[in-house]
Length: 150
Image (cartoon, rainbow, N blue to C red; front, side):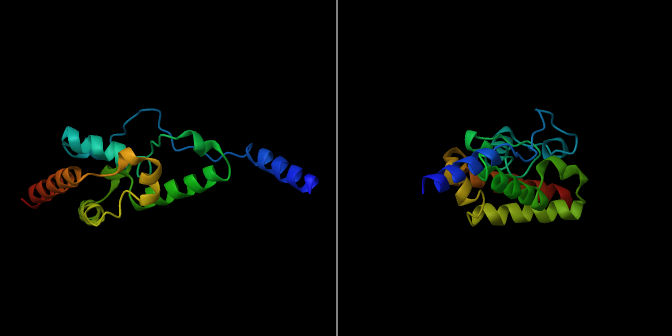
């Protein structure tokens, strides 16, 4: 029994050597970022950065537990999937139609409280959106879409 436990500890320690590539941009905001494409109010930009960017941009802020395998593998897989669905840093490379669809999707997701994910807000309670924040984002999106239709 002791040897089996020692074997598991050894395997756990060895897999710590394997670390996935990190989603870090070192503070550079690309020209395709949503904040460069649209005039974002400071409050909306702050909410997006605090509640969305970790999974939906090229600039994730990693907590201490993200360096522990196999958790880091799971987190990187989750971030990759989030970026495939929506990447705020790549916003300017989306077609106008795709941007409009993504804005509608954002409204639906946050109003239905599907985003940010519960699994994320459980570990990052500061990322949970208040009703006021939801209203601010929805209002900004509605104004943006109205301006685009003109």
